[in-house]
Length: 410
Image (cartoon, rainbow, N blue to C red):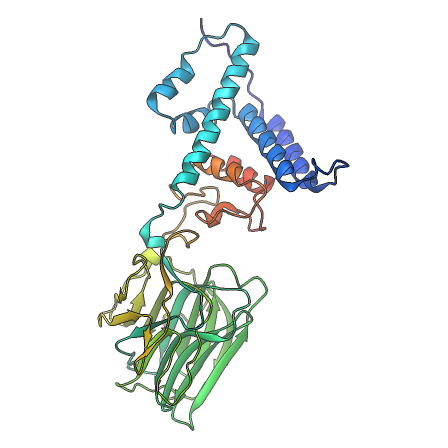
């Protein structure tokens, strides 16, 4: 007996349903007289169940059936399409149950696989002010022009600390420093020639991945955040040294036994690229990690994709410097930043569309399941892009973006 056909909701009906659903989610925080029903976990569970039901109804004809059933084993998928309903009501009920089960199957699969991210999404976590990486070499810029560029996530509450530091006694000092409220570049060439460029970080800058670039071009130093020129300063023409015996570190730094240990910043580094020359002089589109390669101007390039426990990092610059984890000069033992982090990393390559949460080029059942599984919470660590509108919560707005972007990315 053939499976009976069901009416497909038209576009206007879908819009009304989504709007009603969004209003329902927004009002989810209303107080319920019963303490048990007012628990946030219970309200989120109800909202999630309502979401699943609404989506399955609106996408009854082919919208979710194929993507979600494709996540099931072949036998299970075949069973879904050969059942023979006794009545229209039984058919609707059975199909709804199977699609709901498929949705949760997809969500469970995503949760189980969330730790198996691409190694190119790895980053180094600097969780202590003594975390350090010693660079067995130093930068030598042919001219005063240079670029310090990185993908960084500054921990809220981080004190002022070093991201990178290069010094030779007090004669040369090239330092990028950050805190939860400021970011700066410090350049020195002798006691009589020094400059410090500091900028206040905008609210919301900490705790999220940002692309930061410090650029020296002639007598101008520029700060770019997420590709936008935010500040510029005039500096002394030759105020940068190139001492061949300078010492360089990422994180905590110490250059003489008689001097104190300079603390590390607290946060994460996805990659860092130090170059001769001014790579940017106007606002630009920040590169992804997979787009960054060493060239003739590259002085240091670390991508932190090594597994946990690695003691020597790989510098992709032409110098191939040895980078010792947990050690600083002269020598002095520090602590190691945590490597092997692949959860909550920044995407290694460009993502084609906002609705494509897992970055596979399609908006499908996997992206939908990510939203449903984490409904009412912040974006999951494995998928920071799940919060499609960056409002800090997975809700009806993110669901709408996923549904509207259904199919292959343009």
